Amino acid sequence: MARIAYNALAFLPARAQVKTARLELSPNGLRATGTDAYAIGQDSCLLESYEGPPEGITFHVSRETLAELDTGGRKDKKGFGRIEIRPGDGLIFQSANNDTPVVAQDMRELIDGRLWPLVDDLFTRLDGRPPSMPELVAFDSQLLARFSKVKVAKVKGKSGENLERALDMCIFDAKEPILIRIGPTFKGVIMPIDRDVHRENVEQDDGGLW
Image 1: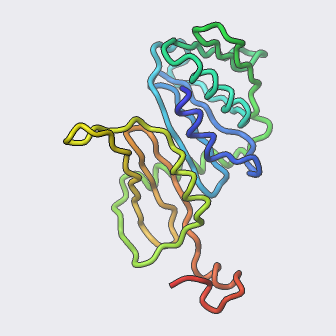
Image 2: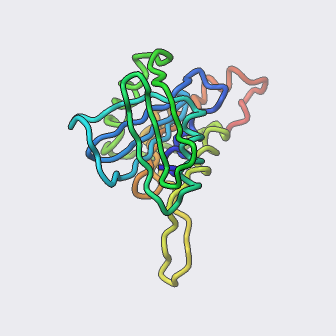
Image 3: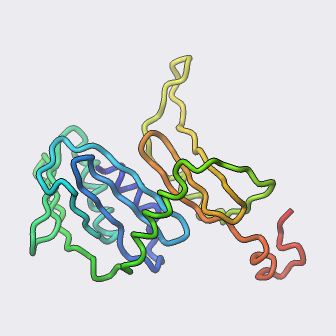
């Protein structure tokens, strides 16, 4: 839980116009998604048990709540925490070490109702689409740097050494959103820079590009 809360938080900066992340609990597990509309980070984990409607429960939390879930999970690495969603009380996370629980109200009133259907449609459209590598793709380096913060388990190399997981990009077009996977559960999306618009916006003839 701490891992996926941390990974979603990396994609919800304080200055973002989007003020909430999405938590989804279902029989398939717990999934957290954060975005500022320029890059998306989504990660998931399995649940030990689930008691709720088969279609799942969706809850919207602030970045402060994500940080508290990350901290609470990391402080209790060997225990099992319990997440409850109660009408009127909101979300309650109680760790096994009986630390002060994380309590959060649903932030649904702050969301743009168009945002999350667009995020889901984007993942559906990109996932499984055949890649096509253009000759040149430009990125905002700060957006790309968010993916370096993603936490995933290291993988063993053939010689027994610990290796970092690869960041795997599926590029379709120089202007299309790019699908990214890191490890077995994390996936994200990054918008490339429109090269023509960039050239118009900077005070250089070539826009600093090739």
